[in-house]
Amino acid sequence: MTEMVDFLMVGGGLASAQAARSIREVGAPGRVVIISAEAELPYNRPPLSKGYLQGKEARESIVVKDQPFWDEHQVEIISGRVATGLNRAARAVTLDDGRVFTYGKLLLATGSEPRKLNVPGGSLAGVHYLRTVADSTAIREAASKAKKAVIVGGGFIGAEVAASLDVGGLDVTLLIGDDLLLGRQLGAAAAAYLMSYFKPKGLNLVTKAQATEFTGSGQVAGVRLQDGRDFEADLVVAGVGVTPRTALAEAAGLPIDNGVVVDAQLRTSDPDIYAAGDIANFPDERYGRRFRIEHWDHAKASGKTAGLNMAGQARPFDHLHYFFSDMFDLGLEAWGDMYRTDEVIERQASTREAGHPAWYYLNEGRVVAGAIVNGSKEERTAMQELLKAKPEATGDMRKELAEGKA
Ligand SMILES: Cc1cc2nc3c(=O)[nH]c(=O)nc-3n(C[C@H](O)[C@H](O)[C@H](O)COP(=O)(O)OP(=O)(O)OC[C@H]3O[C@@H](n4cnc5c(N)ncnc54)[C@H](O)[C@@H]3O)c2cc1C
Image 1: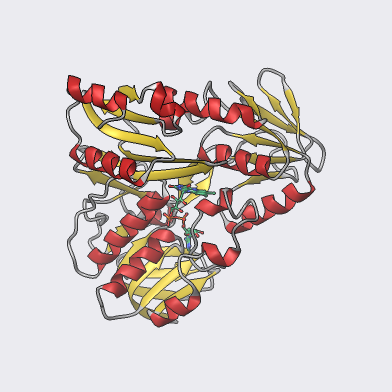
Image 2: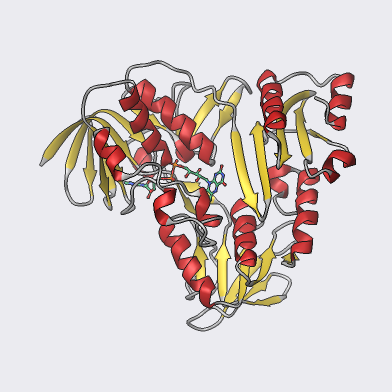
């Protein structure tokens, strides 16, 4: 049976949810449907490695909006169903239960999936990855019975899960691939600060650690490193990056290049198909190049823009990139292009000691990104305003940034 839908979203994450909301907010008429592989309402993933994992946030509190909201806004959510085919000529999406939906406008927002470690012992019980609420629930349950956890990966997921399990009273070892926690994401200066923040918390931080085997029979008993070191574990969580889910778009012949390639209005090469969130590779005029971003705020903002454009607007996506992370009582926030920088100005020790360290990132003499820890409202606003302007870092400005006066 074929059903007609005016606005169809494939993927039941934040990007689709925001697109559906903005279509309704501008009063676009017609049927709006979200297809979600997970048997859940669209929800926020950040708590999965933080409050929800620690048992401090309830399942109901992480949803983007509850069922009455979607009912009231006439957004249909078909959950627990996978879109298996996209036929662009017929403007049709097929589901795994055989249903077919034709669309007026289609959004692809299929998100990411965790990269798996291809090592011996990878399928032992007790080895976990984290992407969904079901994954987080399983880790939470395993943690309630475990004593020793080994976390593989010194990126955001690894750092946050390590902090959450440490708060929960486990003996935690965090395996970091290179020298510094979050070194690739934040650069050496901010990462060195984070290492110094994590060290007194009592976790075992192991650098230059490449996991090559999960040991044990049936149930994981430890992690072996390339250099022969062994770490005991009855719970392992690996956070070693994600891959964008582009298979549906690729099979339909849409251009793929590190994600689904879209234009400034988040439209693919097919004018009736948009992409948003983790899978979208979009041009950014502010920085004069393309990005693919795997962050919550990006999913929210790009979903909103895609929805407005699907509803007939022609808005360029020009959102200032932003991400946040929470570890113990440290709240880290960053804006701008953290991905291509050649110099860092660090606030001087006096502001660091006051608990508000900040870093400004430069590219070819311009301030292109900034990160701050536990920033006040004023500090955060000032940083965003500065970064929107992307100013040239003159001598005076460098001095002000370093002294915390900018
Ligand atoms: C544990 C965790 C913690 C995070 N913490 C932070 C944080 O602190 N700060 C931050 O900025 N970002 C954070 N993120 C990243 C942020 O959550 C993601 O960038 C965001 O969820 C991306 O949204 P999305 O809608 O693009 O995709 P997703 O949230 O991945 O949603 C995509 C959905 O589409 C479904 N789907 C895929 N293919 C199909 C198909 N063919 N048919 C139907 N459905 C399909 C998937 O099952 C999934 O439900 C975190 C992510 C995780 C996993």
